[in-house]
Amino acid sequence: MIAVLQFDAVSRIHLEKLLADGQLPALNSLRSRGTWYELETPSTHVEGAGAYSLYTGVHLGDHGLYYPWLWSAGEQRVRFFDDLPAPEAGWERLERAGRRSLIIDPYEMSPPRTMRGIFLAGWQFKNRVVLRTSSIPNQIHLSLAQEFGDPPVGEEVYGRPAAPELLRLRKSLLAAPRRGADVIEKLVQREQFDLLWISLSAAHLGGHRFFDLSQISEEAELSRYPELGTTLQDIYQAVDEALARIVAALPAGSDILVVSPSGMGPNTSRSHLLPGMLEAVMAGHRRNLIERGAPAGSLLWRIRAVMPTGLRALIADVLPDRWAVELAARLELRGVDWTSTRAFALPNDDAGYIRLNMRGRERDGIVDPQEADALLDKILSGLQTFRDADGAPVIRKVHRTSELGFHGPCEDQLPELIVEWNHRVVTPLAGVSSPAFGAVSSPGWATGRTGCHTGDAWALVVPGSSKLKSPMKAPHIVDIVPTICAVLGVDTDGLSGQPLLEPRTGPVSERSV
Figure 1 (spheres, rainbow, N blue to C red):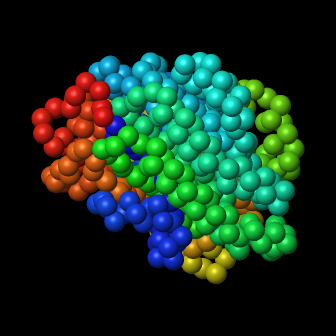
Figure 2 (cartoon, rainbow, N blue to C red):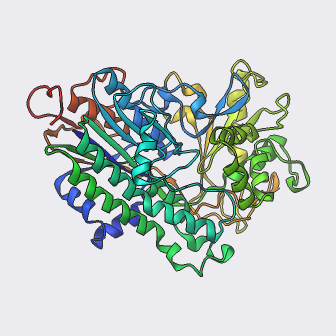
């Protein structure tokens, strides 16, 4: 067996401190037995692309997936990622080769079209966006829940954090890793699998919500609950305890990969301000956007600002999951006048994404492709004039996506510009201003998150029956699926990466030991 244990979106600052203090004994033990690789990842610039590249083994330009809500140019609207084509995941490739997999809670992934073995999503905790309840076989989620109980709810609501909401989320995320270990111990003892892959996703969502509550504690009146301040460290320790149990349950000789496809750092995102900033730049002269209507792309941020988080959570809870995500998709960019909109901000959380309304590509496109470069230059230079209240630049750099190397058949699905914000923690409710384009006020508390993604990806490779294979180029997250295939004797046709392990002697047997 080969086991991929996804310690998802880990904060390197928190991780190294806990390792040094001896508070993550399972990970420390694995580190003493294995080889640590720093991995290249598209998450350095495109926040969510790392997970899709990890699971599929192909680069961003080959899959075009980078966020749960994606732009559909042919429909001139936003779609939930389940509605758009995607390459097969690694476990679907294994299915074609007759291999059996146990897959638990892959973050932001659609259920497989077909798979030998067991697929469980929404098992450790339920989240309508990133971990929707599904299973293969269909009834196994229900039968396992009868033994282990229903999964806790791990929903987050964008906006001003409230202590009761955060306390409920803390409880759910601390319980989640234990549920993952529980079901693995049962299923691995009962059945044989060639691949085990679990995303210990409590670390991911916990990083977003609990990275550093001191950023918002005074505003949100959270200081009365000191346990909230240690939540992320507590989650990491719960994940480590689950790692120890999972490793102990693996068959002898199993190869182990502990992987984090992106990192987590302090929230520096001003993406809720980006629609207003872009509107000001496109207007081409100084104007006060406070007195104008909502700029294109800001409607959903403004709804979040005026509707209390508790009410929005209540509405979402009474809707079927599919209806809730479809409603969010339809509210994104709703009401935009496409006959006059030449550029618009795409849905985003961390980095900012800007796309042109291009003639011949978008259904209602109006920008002549020959004018695109000049228009992008105008936007790029204009955005960089914006400053925080103390005069510091809001933006560190605006990247042209075409220059980042994300080439492939799906590169047309990507934004043209990616905004990298400065590295200062965002101040809730603060706006920005430009000497050329005026002031842009905040539409509200934005996400309310205190952590956002970084490009700090890594893998810890611990050989069992296999042996290390020296990488021929810099290791990348797309190397994980080829590594699985190499160990199990499955073809790697069409994959972008290289294997980091290889069998010790000849091809593997029909059934992994």
